[in-house]
Image 1 (tube, rainbow, N blue to C red):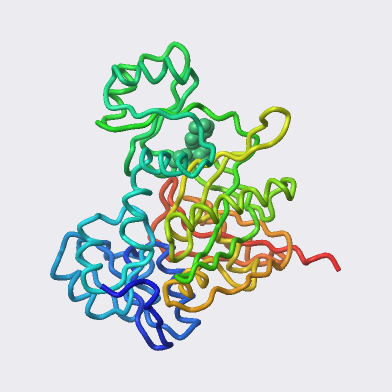
Image 2: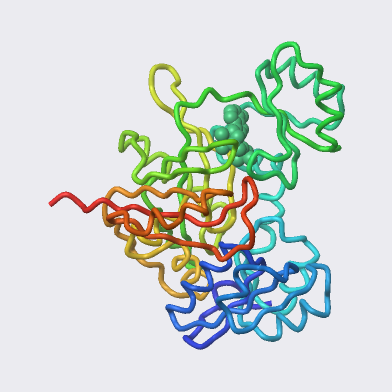
Length: 366
Ligand code: AMP
């Protein structure tokens, strides 16, 4: 199929988006601003992204016929979530360029493959071990120590598929409760703060990183992001160069997020990589209102074969997620000076469901 370096879309061309959540919706809105059309593929008839595009395919990801018809309708395919089944990506990639490339999913869908990949690049992570039984869990605990975090290798998000193991816990019980055959054990990182870098890479290898973002989670779900992170510039530069190294090593085309921990080591702060998300990311939502070019537009530019923008941040920015019932209070945000409200058009709020977000930009000091 066409190599990513050969993709060069024109306004009026159609971008296919796999996944119909808020990320797909915001990608489609950014694409529309540049004159592209989008077609969204999602199995969920209530997909919020369906509301902002003319053409939608509502079908299962295993529906080969629907995938083929979808591929025929679009010029390039991208996705809003990393758990795109390999078979789905393969059917599409045989017909249209899929960006970011399918092989990247193999690394980022598996926490062990991802940690091995990051380690091979000489980038620090928490100590980790492959775990495939209660016996290997016990051996891993002996090597890594406690507390530690056990995570399923696949399909974990927002703290799902993971548990903290403390002194006195029963490894057999924990292994049974996790209900998987493949997991990793990670040393518990006593982090000082959590940060992320949103980076965009074009097919010709240009990379643009946004200012490092600082992230606060509640119940394992991102609640607040602030840009720039309150860290020394030297550390921020290190974080950005890690993201750039990862993007280059993956020969990545599009936007990716690298989540990191800041830890105090030998008296100085260091960053450890926690996770790579091969897609636009919640901690980059501030760029919609807080920067001249959003992460969504950067992604669309990259997969369209357009030059990346040179985003300028408008000032200190805070992004607050409206989670579950938070959405019921959306009106109170409408009149907050400097605030921009984004509602995702989802159905009823459920605990933990991301329903919208608010960005607040402080004016840049003169
Ligand atoms: P993850 O699904 O890997 O992104 O983890 C979700 C959240 O759990 C992270 O944002 C951290 O707050 C916490 N967490 C994950 N791994 C560790 C770790 N090894 N040590 C301490 N906290 C962790």
